[in-house]
Image (cartoon, rainbow, N blue to C red; front, side):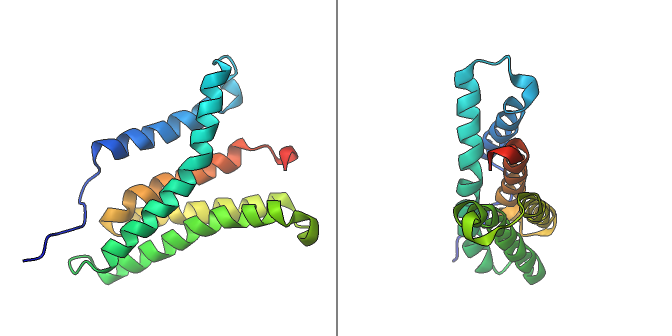
Length: 155
């Protein structure tokens, strides 16, 4: 008899991690300048590392959901699109930053593209496989928050 490997609900640590991403975003906003510097620094590190961790988690759960027979195939394909959009939302600005000297790309267009890809990941979390809803939703939210927090003048 096969053990069901998919998860049909969010566990406590997933709720806490999602709350941590939202709190780290709000503490990086200009309105939170009264917070101690250490709190803002930790919040920025959480905001920088959250998309990377959630991309890895979404691809790991996609491998499990793909082999699940109880999940509908259209939901698996929507999740596949969401995983690719989330990964591309992180790769596009990274390529622009690292190879910006050679490519001469406009950062505002790159940011709009990455925000669009983050929104695709958010929407695919609503229609995707159940086990991928958390990493796609929080990953799209964290990536969009990261793009909105970094000022254009820095890059």
